[in-house]
Every structure is written in C-alpha cells, then in structure tokens.
Length: 576
Image: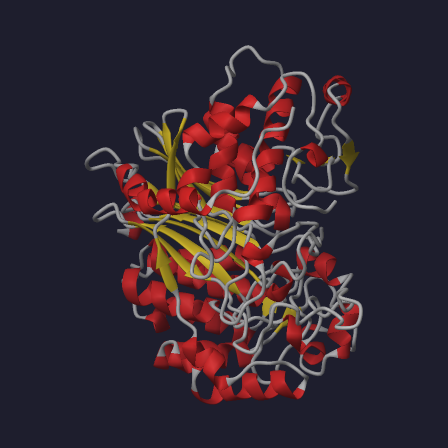
C-alpha cells in the first residue's frame, strides 16, 4: 500500500521549522583533539585544476585558498561544466574551531523574471528550448561572488595569489581534452551560432582536436578585476556593463540592478547521524542533502548484515523513490518558500516512509500520492583536505553542458542555463527528467532548486569529502558513495564503483553498462523493478579521505574520464 502522505499541513511545517536550528546545532560533529592529516589531498575533474590547487597549497595557502584556485581553474578548463557565468555550493569545515558552513553561491532569477515566462500564453505549453539556449535561459551568476567570499572570510592568501595560477593558465593556454570534446559534440551547432562562443571555444567553426592549446586572455582579465576590486570587479563597472548590454541586446532580461543586488548566502549545513557517523551536507536550495538524509535514514532502519545484493538494492531503490518524490513536492529556495527540512530529515519521518516499503515488491511511483506527472548531466565537483584538517567539498555548474551556449564578447566565459532548474510548469519534467511543483516555481531574485550535494562523512576512524556532477543522478551517486564508505572502501574504489539510479519519475531503474550481474538483475525484475541499462556511464565523483589514526590521506578521481581528472596528495610537512 502507498503511504498515506500528502502535502504537509502549514502548522506542522511551521512547528518543524522552529525546531530546525536546534536540531542542527545538536548534531555538530567533533574530531579527536589534535587530529591532523599527515598530508594534503585534492581530487578534481581536471588535472590542470588539481595542479593549480596544489600550487596554492605549496605557497602556504589553506584548503579554502586552494578551493578558490581549483574552482576558477575548472571554470576555465571545463567550460562545459562550470565557470564564472554559473554558480556553486562551497561546503567548508574550518579546523581551528570546527566551524561548518555552507556558502551558497547559487544563481538567481533576474528581477524581471515571471512565473510563466517560458510558457506560450496561447497554449500554456513551454516554448521549445528557451530554458536551454540563449539569453532568457541565463540566471544571474553567483560563482564570482563565491570566490571572493571564500577567499576573504576563510582563506589565508590574498585573492590575487590564489588566482595567479589560473590567470597564468588562461594567458599561456590550457589543453583541450577528451571530456571537453565529448561534451561539445551535442552543443557544437549552438556554440557555432553564437558570436562570442564560436571564436573562444571552436577552431574554424568546429570542435577542437584533443590536445589543442586554448588561450583565454578575457578570462584572465575578469579574474584580475576580481582580485583587484573584489565582487565589484564583476558585479559593477566595466564587466557588469558589458554583460548586461550583451544579454539585453540578445533579448534577455538582465539589468545592472540584478548584478548589483547579488549576494552570497551563508547557510547552516544539514547535519544528521547515519550508522554511527556524522554526515554534513547541503541544505536547500539544494535538494541533495534532504534526499540524502531521507534515503540513508530509511535504510538505517533495516537490518543490513546478511542481506544479499539484490535485497539491498531493492531497499535502496525504494528509499530513493520516496526521497525524490518529496523533492518534487516540498523543496525550493528557503528564502522564498517554507521548506520543512527538520520534518523531512527527522528519523521518525523516515520510519513512516520505511513502513510503506514492501520487502519483496516494488512500489509503483504512481501509487505514491504527490504530483500529477508522469540526461544529459554535467556540473563539476572537487574535494580538498589540507594539512591542518580544513575540508572543502565544492560542486559548481553552468547546468547543461556548455550552459546556454552564449558568451558575451570580451568576458571569456559561457553563461548558464539555470532557469531550466526551476519548475516552469507544475509536473513538467526539466532537461534532467526531474519534476517539480510550486515550491520551485520561478520568482524574481529566487534561486532555483539544485541537486548538487557536496558532503562530508565524519566517523571515528575516517573522514570523507565527496561529491559529483550528474544532474538528477548526483543524489543517488552520493548516496552510493556514503554507503561504500560505510563498507570501508577507499577513495579510488568509491569513485569507481558501478552506479544505479531511481528518481521517482520516470519509474525505472537506470543502470550503468555492466553494473549488475544477471542474477541480481533477475531478482530485481522479479520484485517488479523496471531496469534500463544506459548506453554509457555517468558522473564524475571526486573523493578525498583522511584516516584519523595515522593521518594518511587519499585522493580518488573518477576513472570514467581516463587521464582527465586527477587525485593528488602531498606530504604535510611541505604544506605547513
């Protein structure tokens, strides 16, 4: 039977909102006194970015200075995944006082945005591709403000020093790689049609060859403006004027006020207990942390030892089905809507969801009360541990590969298409197949709901820093990463593990090629699960692990993009 759950009553939402601050504070983790890593670790999706971060650590910077360097470098060398025209989330732990903070540098809707701006007024149906390509798809970028904020409030070095390796890389040239080429394949025509993107990213109108050196002096100039003037170097003055003029000339809505009003928001991370460990993760406007907490706490109520692989997968799929259903109904920007985080992440609520799971049968998604509706994922993530025990898990994006395929000439970066992450019509799937309701509707200045889930897992013996790109699949990958960490796997093994995914709608289990053996597939199908093996693998998980007893650190980059990402470690004495 389906659980008897519908939209939560307002009085119940208000009650749990009032409790949420106390619940978070009570769960704050403490590491053993004097615990310090014996080295440093950086895992990122591109070796050029990892190297930039390690250079900053060698200069005497901490994990947060290195995060600024890696973030800015990824925006340069992975333009398909992130950049100054996008946004991101910085999950940080400061070793000196144990402070945990979630720096929300998510994009915002323009102030002129409206609830139905992408719908045809005559039919009420979406206008084709307007949330994906061109100026209306772009929300106001947040990553530049995030870089400045992290450097000023948590870093040790001047911003100019943290950005120096990236400025040099932009001027001397970065190397176009296999991932750049693969992701450009389905966006080449859109990039070629844009007068700013074509000369910056294409060679004679076509995708560059792997190994091509790509220079970007405009990107270096914008980074210099940030280093010299802080956020004003991007959100005011020449850069801002150029961005607004270019977007409006193309038919967009941006104004100088949109940029001038942008602010980073510091939020309390979502913190909960799981199998004797503390999990620190992303709060709204990310949906990832809530779904992670729900799924793991549902699973914590089942006896795990002795179950075979098919039984464990069945329970995980059913838990994810329910978490993704709640994502569609309840989650949005907490500055605009009441998000019942404390209720949705309460173990008692998880127990209620658990009670509706049949141990031998799949629950069809249509039987779960909720919304009336029935990947080309990108984004990027990196994980850092420094020699003091500072931690940084950072996920950043321009949404779909190569964002909205638009570069304002003279800026050196693509704009995002994050407006597609809003629910443009209740129950209508976005580009990742995710559905939503009014909580994630478009509103002026609102941040769209995200799946990005940077996460720490703090146990008595080990600490993990992890995250991944992957659109709607981010959450299911991080769930799997935490469960693999529970089993004792190392950083490289966690990043490499085969993946499965279920997101409530469509009602199917996606599998990486060869992820399950024939017997396990048959056992899941016998329970009523519809399995779909995808033609290619997904995600790009980056994991760093700190062993508290020995101080040893590990860095594991996802092997799915061979010789592109890089996990790097170094001896602590060099970096103190």
